Image 1 (spheres, rainbow, N blue to C red):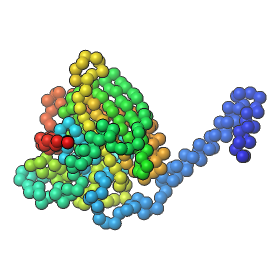
Image 2: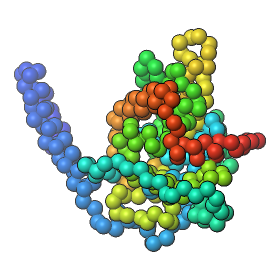
Image 3: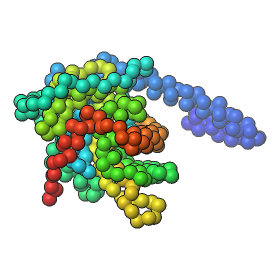
Image 4: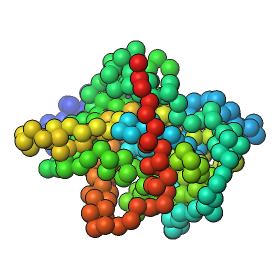
Amino acid sequence: MALIGAFLKFLERPTIGGVLVDMLLFLVPVWIAFVVGVIVGWAWKPRWAATQGYNGKFNCSAVPSPSVDVISSPVKGLGSTQSLNSFGSCAMEDGVDKEQVYTPFIEEIDCGSSQLKKEEGVVVTQEDLEHLCHLVDRTDGGPPWKHMMDRSTPNMSYQAWQRDPETGPPQYCSRTVYEDATPELLRDFFWDDAFRLKWDDMLLYSATIEECPTTGTMVVHWVRKGVPCTSVPRSDKPRRVDLYYSSWCIQAVASSKGNGQLTACEVILFHHEDMGIPWEIAKFGVRQGMWGAVKKIERGLRAYQKERASGAPLSRGLHFWLRSTQKSIQIT
């Protein structure tokens, strides 16, 4: 009641200017208190909060989570992987140079007895691909999507949706159409770790832990996001997010230029994660940073187009990824 009374007194001022000044003086302390509360609440937390749920072992059958590893067995034109993140959320220390490390290449390796086999519970499966198809077709049985954003540039259009499931963090869906691009180029762009270090400032470190020349499957260590792997221990910083899902679908579409040609490329992304902060604050951050992140990805894509057009050789890691696209998975 005190707040209501104070507000009514403002309206009794004889001039509009006086009302605005008093309202400004009234609201500024409230906003300052809110911002300070958010900062203090985020910066101060007990040590156990940073490592909640860790008991010294990884449950590889759990939902893929954004630790610092990526294991993927993608399918040509239709990918489902835990490595893509258009919205971004990771802890990095300024002043540290980006680095990419490769393990020694082994021509002949027994993939059946490798770490890849031991971690088979986190490799993308047929069920993951079928679930992605249901998401794309909007037949997954989830709540309806609410439109969030519709932006465009001369060479790109972007749409985004969001929904709140009964349990779990907010879920996001986005559709980006790049003009004058092919699905193969987009696939290579997202998979090329060596080039990603040039444009993705959310990626601080990349290393290949293990690779299988026969199948093209790789275990990759990123200081960013990924899926659990017992060979990379949990640390307090960057903080590991235990609930993370990110899948995408790439296909050629007709250009918006009206020429009827399939010279554009569509990327549909489905993403959700629990970053350990209040979901409403997370949704606010996503809304504020989404468009900037999308424009950054397009700048990286156009730079990648120029590099590939110049005849630059494919990176070693991309050669391995491309081997896995030879597999064909039929959805019934």
